[in-house]
Image (cartoon, rainbow, N blue to C red):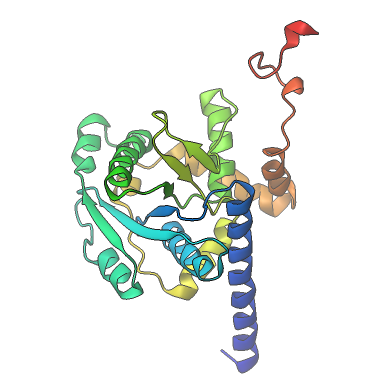
Length: 263
């Protein structure tokens, strides 16, 4: 790499980290995700998204107008070949308070879901239960997950095409029992920026054994569709994302959202 190429790459990297911080900070402010005195539990799976979430929150905390505590949590789900020492070693070197929770979700999914069928839904419910119980034990006010803008858009179309519902992952969600609040601080961030940042930071990425064995082919199809739109119709995906915060219930068909009978 020439000096000019190096300087250009550094310039792009600096712009990227500023963009990540700005967009994450905006999402947190827009949805009041983190408030003064909060204890935020960050799920760290070993993937690029969760590492990026943790790193950006750590950096934002240094300059944030509110004081909040961070605890990282890694869930050991018992999948074969899982590199159990990688994440704890990284978190320890980063100086982060952390917990490792062991729960054999792999055996449950293997017993219930046939090979070749998507196990994402069951896996997600099992993980969510483990995170809820851990949050209660450590006294966390918020549970932060690494879902990003692309996840939100893809989930919208998954539900629309295959579920017959018009919904997606919200930036902030209270659990059914009312005891926990999930937040997604990367809701405004593009996956491409996260991937580039993860490469620059050289995060110790660990692949998920569940995702390899029980791949959700429908999500893969949707992801490719959205990527194709990005290339062939610039601006379309951005408009779709903007539309989710610009909803007109009176121009849809749900009578629970709008009282059509009174017209």
